[in-house]
Image (cartoon, rainbow, N blue to C red; front, side, top):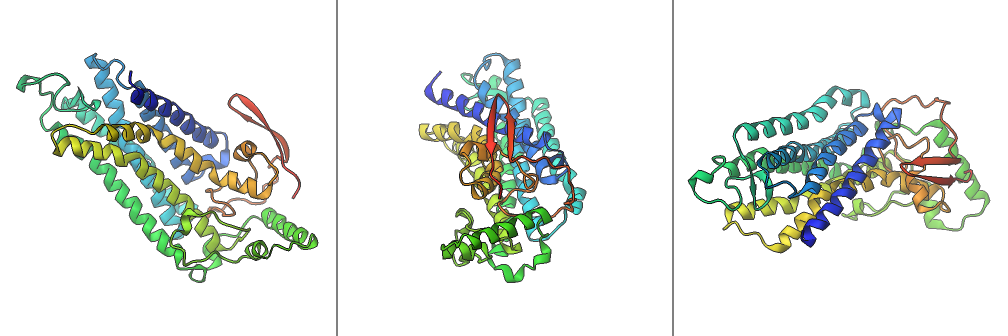
Length: 392
């Protein structure tokens, strides 16, 4: 086993762990289970777990035709749906920010976003099986015309296998990416136009408890005589410079709670998902293009990049998914440890996920059953992390 295969297996294990973390976050929270965004992330995580396991198995059992076909089947069944679920998240953010759809209206289309990717993946995997397209090739057990090491007409396992590979997998992946890119472009221009064109009522106000906490925090800052003018202006709602074209890659500052600021926060989250999506599928698509249009040889450095990026989506999705909570906790409780900031939950944790932003769904904000987590123990798979969040 070469170093590239070992590296791929290690990254695949981390990806499985990241995807299972997202799945656990959704399953353990009743409010998250009821929201379309978190359901999408749960479905994406399950598909990514399946695909990462396939990558981890790698070439094991490839010499056995039955095991090789099984590996190729699950690879096709889970590979394209992960891309489509990413696109579903981008479409969700587009509808939320640009079209101002409510959670109730989102639920009317959620079944398309949740079930179409699975049906496509399962359907194309079954079609490839019936067409006898699975074989061991230079890219492992997948849709291949000639089994590895076999030459001649009698070795052809499926006619037009490379063409089917493009139609079943790569074209849907990149159509999905183009849709995602289009959605994020529209979101970018919608948000970059500024807060004047986004009325406050288009995005819901924050819960009363959160607003009261913000007012109390501002009063405490005034009493303490905060001399930091820049931070003071940001806390009062000064929007960051709109002339910066790369605003979505930069962290926000201050405690602005306006509708335009929350839209920017949602847009940032969506853009990070898109970057993760592109990073995962660019190199493997380049590998397939070189294999099809060239002489079949693939540069070693391209193979290394595929080993690094293809199984890594679960890792980066987990980072992006937990990022809002981490930023929120570090902002509210600067003395909290970084590890505790990742896992410490509060009343804001069930929303879409961008610091200081609120979901558009009509959530009952008068729920008095939330547990006080300011001095709590947060259980996480195999360890206990003490979180001591000081009173605001």
